Image (cartoon, rainbow, N blue to C red; front, side):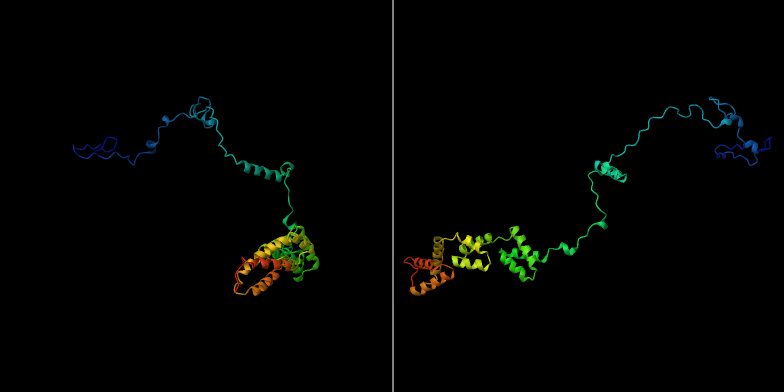
Length: 280
């Protein structure tokens, strides 16, 4: 059905029938019908409470913005640097500014290219020193013995003399100490007599004054006691001989050990006496 305004009348559905869809605007509405109601919009020409108008610029109504003073903004906490790092930064800053206070007590070295360079060959110990130290590492030596050894290496005599003097000053070469050690070792461990000890010290080129001083500790009584001990040990190996042969062999043995004739005779008699071994 049509209404008086030319539109179709609303359709009424029977009970139980599905409702009609919502009425859609017709396409023949005019722009004026779709325009908003301007009367409902605020009057932009009217002044605001503070006297400002839209013509003087945009404004916000009073109370729209919280005009109270903002709270004090706390600055973010800055992590404190370690004292050593802070000190290093201050030092570098002072050095860049050529501050005398910061550089006090600091010694600046020359540029690397201006430093004196050491020849690797000069850093090595000289041949004479290497040879002397290697020799002393094997055994004790007398000054003359060291001199002979270095000269046999075809080393310059002046260098040899300087090296021997250096070793003597350092206490690494000492004929008196060497002589005392040799006398004690040859007498107590090897059972040698005074003449054999003297021959060994001379062979080792020990200074004669040092030899005489060291042999002063060897007296006749000590030598006789040592010779008798050696003879008794040796006599036990001569039991297969007759007494005369045993005496001859034992005497020769003690003489080779460096004992004098008087000491040898007394030691043989003590070793082959009644308490000694029996001979055939």
